[in-house]
Length: 347
Length: 123
Image (cartoon, rainbow over all chains, first blue to last red; front, top):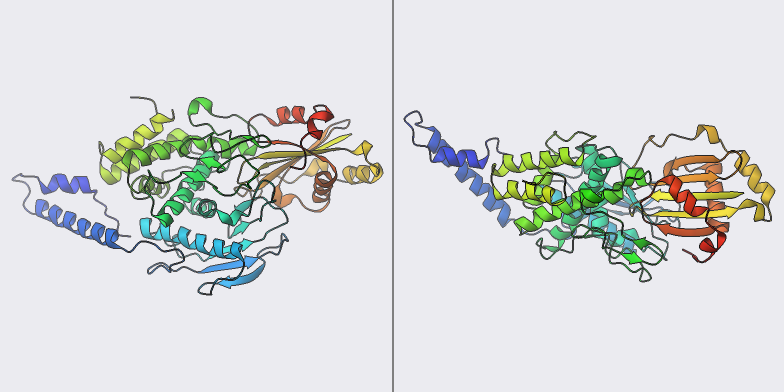
């Protein structure tokens, strides 16, 4: 992706400058702005992503393996890149969702696969018996089939696949430590990009999106729509056995616990809600601006592995200002999003 | 003697627990041999190769003294795995809950009268 060192608002200012000191600079700035517009027009005119489409300028190499109910990895290869679908719906779902994830990162952010260098995408399905989980093991995605009582198969949700692969992106970018606030940020970054993968695949705007993570994972027995809600943390499920979705939506309700590495899947609700606020304040397709802010933040090099929510928030605001200017609607929405969840102080 | 295994973490961040009273089991001796043979004082560090969204297992044996081990899913192998599988197969599921509360509070809930666990059924 073309990256411009001088941000647009600076070029704009220069383009309009009228000073005896400047003879060539304003015209140079105008040319720079025209070039940016051309690049933007080309990106906007690019065809929408299609499920399973092969990217043109970022290699996509998917290999799906079957662990056959064992916990042996990688398992037996059952589908390679370019091969037709098999009868196994889990294989098809994994294959297609890997493609959708690759497509978001390439088309929206110019990132070639998880590592930015075309890393092959490998997944293993049918891991374990009644295994109600999915994970990224540092090199591949692994999916269980669920226990059939509470959970269905984990390939059934595109947001889950995107979430897990985003852990890989985090591994190559911020390396946020998986505990406490940095761990909750790690989890939230995965939910953010997991949701964006799904929205990008379906061509949804922020208003049209469900903002649910893991919709369709629960069996019909469970009273719940999804595992998590970014729009309304704490409302995704309310079941007589599982209990109620415990996610907080505001720093006032931050959960102190020793479980779950300090509640990384719980407190992620707070930065999730911040992102939702930014995305809906800006409107339109969330991956284009709110998602761009978050992507710029995690690739800035300014997020420490032990970042707190507040430190991460500051990096996102700086990223929005760098790309769109201080005082821009994008920068203001980012600040307001974090204020809305109590991470940044009110004005 | 109550043995409790608690599974926390995972993509869903849910905590589920199972427990068994080994003295009420017909093969108590084999349970005690298994439990005594475990390397309680040298459990693998949870920091080793921590992977996001993996489960973390907490095993507590309410004996004198109480024995406790915390193991990342990847380290739940051999006799540790055997103990967990036995407890899950034979024991009662304690109502899973999602999240808040320290490990100690969760264990206090687990030690509640048997009636609380019995009503929870197969989940």
